[in-house]
Image (cartoon, rainbow, N blue to C red; front, side, top):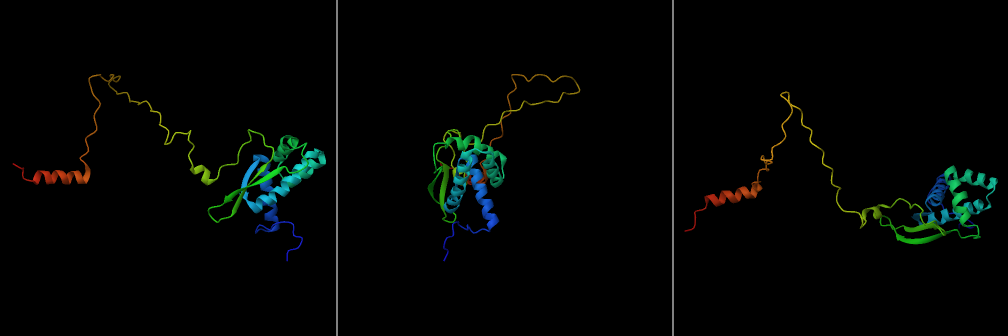
Length: 196
């Protein structure tokens, strides 16, 4: 029996598990909203809540402890200057987990881990494959038309090229014969006796 075991193993060794939770916490602080599996979200929530509590104190010692654990100075700066001041009046519960259905590949339960108080212009996490397949309605479908390049004519040795006359018409492409079936139709029409 696993009595008093306070963390999930997540099918990883101790060092791999620590690196995973660290990267999830960094992503949560950077993007303020991430999607992952439910057990990973629960473990990342525990770590993130502790980091925000440390950052709320704002002391130099707390900054050094947080940066030693996060191992990213940019994320630490974001945590202390942008995220922690939003939670000054809150004594806990800085994040929430929202269940997001099941993953199509293996049926794993998915969850969205996000900060409770987010800034409105926060960048979102890069979209998943399913979200990128759906085309936005405001974007026109199909490839964008390519701009036409001006034609460059080589100057002839006899002198400058004469401007094209308005009388000359551009050459029309030859008409298609209709392919294989069109050829068969013509063959059988010619070989058939005319009705009188």
